[in-house]
Amino acid sequence: MPTVHLLDYVAGNVRSLANAIEKLGYTIAWIKEPEDIESAESLILPGVGHFGHCLTQFSQSGYLEPIRKHIDSGKPFLGICVGLQALFEGSAENPDVPGLGIIPGKLVRFDDNEKSVPHIGWNSAATNKIGSPQAESFYGLRNSSKYYYVHSYAVPYEEGLFERHGWTVATAKYGGEQFVGAIGRENVFATQFHPEKSGLAGLRALKAFLESKRRETWEETLWYDVGQGLTRRVIACLDVRTNDQGDLVVTKGDQYDVREKGEGQVRNLGKPVDMARKYYEEGSDEITFLNITSFRNCPLADLPMLEILRQTSENVFVPLTIGGGIRDTVDTDGTKVSALEVATLYFKSGADKVSIGSDAVTAAEEYILRGKRLSGETAIETISAAYGNQAVVVSVDPKRVHVKSPEVTKHHTIKTAHPSPSGEEYCWYQCTIKGGREGRDMDVHQLVTAVEAMGAGEILLNCIDKDGSNSGFDLELINDVKKSIKIPVISSSGAGNPAHFEDVFQQTPTDAALGAGMFHRGEYTVKDVKDYLAEKGFLVRQFEDKI
Ligand code: 1PR
View 1 (cartoon, rainbow, N blue to C red):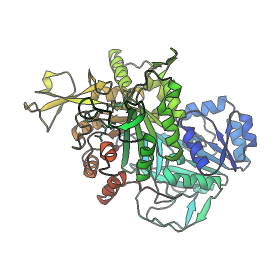
View 2: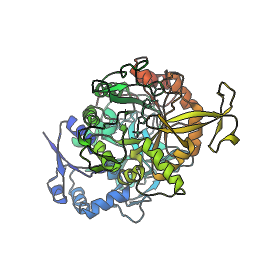
View 3: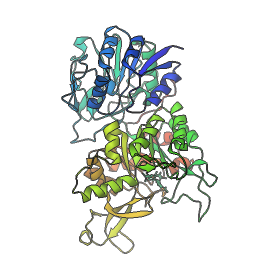
View 4: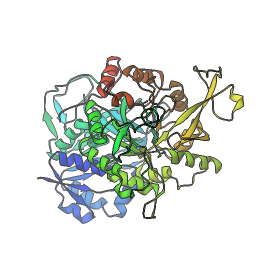
């Protein structure tokens, strides 16, 4: 089979990229040192995280000149995410670290006054005005497709600026900012989005690169004017734990109680890998696994969850998040394993983001006790320093606490439209750890502002009172959290039907919405939700079932 060389820059989930390339019928030659690049016919440079960290690594390991030589030789080169950014002159992210300077221009940070940053989700890569069918496709990109982006810095697009140097540009819009989604000229192609995480639309672009099909005429068959901009992100979540027979199963709690009524069996709703693939094929924009069993007696390297990720990432080409047990730990043989090492095990197995729950609460408590000074040692700080903040999600498990008035508590309260049975009209949201089993003297506002300062890239906002209730999301909680932070928020807990997704997108500025029970119980599919949202006029990504 034809070979493609992949630079094994371990700063993220190259496994999924490898799976995508192999799925397209190519074998991978892993580049382990600069000399390997000389023999590369076709070279792919992935990269996530910080521009400076990435470029410094490439430069210190002696990769920059061989990469430049490869490009100058006219052999095919694909840069992905930071691999695109590296081609430019530099980035505001690390002003003192130069890029390769092959393309004029510098990256700037998105403006976060009106929108969340990082930019996370599905957006366009359009080579001409949306709404005008294309006669020709640039590396298989289609105006009617959406691609997965996850970045805080972008190359601003200015009509003609790149074109006059012979570059073809595909763009996207985020808020009022139009930026470079993909760019190419002769043997060079680069995407800001992740083609290995953009479903079959992404694999189509990857295939076009591998086959050097820079341009092809085609009939735009699935023509619908999807419009520019970020789609409403719909996520399926699988709570996973071992059942009493020791198998990892998908389960679902009601207010976090996953056992059938009383001390019954652990609710077994199916196999994680099968269900993840089902939701992917229904159009889920991401898949989240929350591992709610702590594997006390299992060596970390043999964690069944790692195998689930490996298998899932072979056929599911959208972002995978894994939560549960991401913290400094001691392995069964007594060796200390840092949260960063635990996270690296998951990234190498196919995860794109890790979700931290209990450990984030503890870290936030210590951060506040230290007078809001960073320690540099927390799981959030070390993982986001190594992999970028977009790889770190903090999962919040709050419980409502009603109070008569704001004066009776030091905590951040809201006036609620749902007073307690005894008429208390205010409430605060108490953070919990250990899957809701232990309440802490911390409110959600304190937690989310602390973890944002520590470098978390996204919040998974659950709500114990709403979990499994089918009564809709806790809109008051979501609106309150969205007022406190700039990073994206995934609303979770309570979804019971497609209209609940309309409510949360209509009545809050949430960046994404997550469902679990309603999907696992087969009451609705992810496609039902997306079709419903599309009918109501929301911008959603349609699942594409062919490359
Ligand atoms: O504390 O870092 O080890 O992480 C543990 C993770 O597992 C946290 O993300 C925590 O939310 C989750 N977790 C722990 N115990 C449970 C449980 O259910 N017993 N799951 C649990 C919490 C929240 C969502 C749920 C939504 C949507 N589940 O995953 O799926 O509420 O449900 P719905 O749409 O059916 O209402 P750490």
